[in-house]
Image 1 (tube, each protein chain N blue to C red):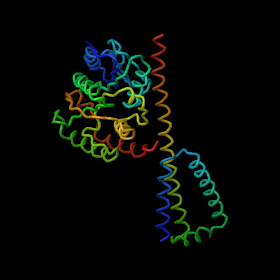
Image 2: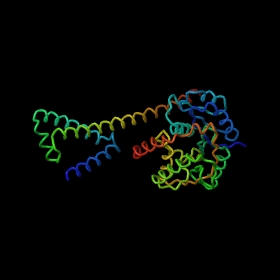
Image 3: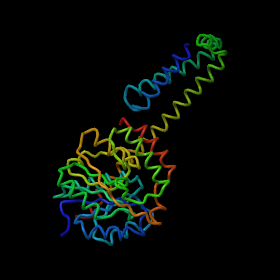
Image 4: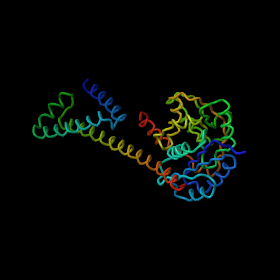
Length: 226
Length: 110
């Protein structure tokens, strides 16, 4: 029994090696899978099109936030979609977590459920990455006033009400903070859920370089009041 | 003392400028100040002592120093202006790329 009424959005950039497996895993559970190719330079688009997923493709690379926005906008135009999931394309997220988060959202009538690596010690996060994430979390906590333990987790589940309000200005990694600010601003009902992140050699090599935090910080500070 | 007031004033202006670089208000002021700067330039060439007098008013040694500081300021603002303009353009392009992806998909489905 597949999950219906739900669009799961998988933004992808240069994930040609794993995208097919990721999409097929998700397709076993979810009915409507949307892959947004963010101007990849490799075979990502071709590989994605070999699956039953819906594939949209950017002609230029504009950022994960941009790919999400494209996915959300398209999903909103489809019939019978009331729930939305954002899911990473590098194989780090677990489909079961997404399913559990959706159940929680429906049961507790929440607007958004956010995955967290830091509740109940749920993942083996590499130390340096952990420190960097903690710093980002503290900053975002200060900025948004929300006490969230994992501020840059790509696994989220939300309802249509929330989806319709998402209007990202930041298309780079700062979009994560923008989503949190939206929760705060419009007082959406949110909850965190412990998720497992599989850090494979492949995904570790593709993670956010620590130096990129400087770029994100810069963009956030300058773009705040748009 | 005047230096402190001026610096404070400049910082406030900077923040306001960064927040709304393309509002009509800010755009007009940018142009006004630019023209003003041009006229001051013309005057200081025609009446070289103006710079010295102005410099002494603020508490800076020479007119040439005043010119240097003003130039540094103008350059600083120009650099920020260019950066912000590019960021704005980026945003516009990104929106188009996103729309295009959806349109292409809808066209393919027909």
